[in-house]
Length: 402
Length: 91
Picture 1 (cartoon, rainbow over the protein chains, first blue to last red):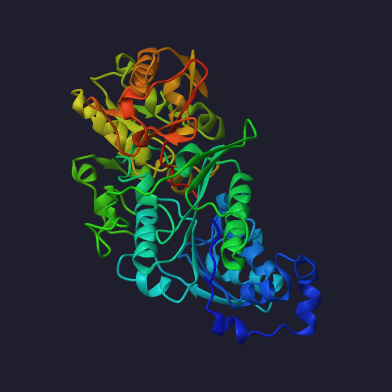
Picture 2: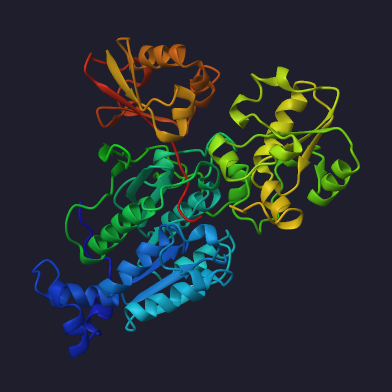
């Protein structure tokens, strides 16, 4: 399926290419599938990238180099050292600065003919339609379910194609959701998984090159949509397994009962996606899950240190994975490693009499474990607030943060 | 034997395997055999007796929802795939 006429013909007619641009794009111009008319389409086109991170990095750089006229970037985050393993649009000098600053500077350096519009906000139901409206193509490079459903629904309501990519560890997914011509994200996944059932990249890790592969494929699909050439990924989903270097394709069908893109939709406006998914969309969110309202008692790193220094008998239970233990651990304080997935079957190793401080990387998994253990009758449980990373930052700088 | 491809997020519950050989003449029987072999998978695939709505099962590139669902016949050398939703991308 190819999409014709995505770009307004009047906008294409207004576009001129300077001699410098002709030279810049010469390898495109000599291909009949692109040519002068195609390159003008690219220059007349506008693409919105949700996220300037792992997927957004290759997307922004390749789309800029290819000569997309206007690129919009939505991101509110700042660059962190742990981003640099895969977010190649940012450099070491950018750590601590807003991602949009370094992304915009890099795009301008690659191609000064590109207009870069930045939106330093969290995407929400209140601003999504307004931000999406002026763009021809939206590209989803987010890291959480609420924003994925929000992006899908806003694209369906506005009739825009959504170039979808998603990554986890060594595996990636790619498709184009375009309700005008095929299925949408909700046709494939009507509902999100329950919170906690599917780990995030921050928890499960991701091969640094994987977003490069998937992001470059998303950029390819965006270019094909704009040029109206080739077989697009509308109605198809590619699964990429980097470990086995395998690509598998499956067919996607429009769900006749889809709540948003069927002929009789039950959703006609944006909803509260954090409530729908039962999880916050971003760390600036005020969303509180029903679970987190349950009592999980927290202990600050400094408070734990004082109590240990005072000689109190406290067991430290580390629920991370063994590879994380190799990076940093509190073994010298008697910490015991039982990964989250094994805690319930190894409950017998825990001392119900003593107080147990449960600890992970930043405090989320350990809180999950505390809720599970509470259901099995454990009472003297405390969550190390901010995990071992906060401990490293506030109590023991000899421990690395990851 | 029919092969079931296990996606990365579910591999920890399938002994780390990326594919599992199962028996059974239908999609339902094959998935039952899979969850017998790897009981930890069951809660990730089923809500009670019902397949969870965010889990898609494909037989040779077709969504079984658009074939005969759990009753779809499966031949010896067919491949079943479980496609879960994953959200990663930004961070």
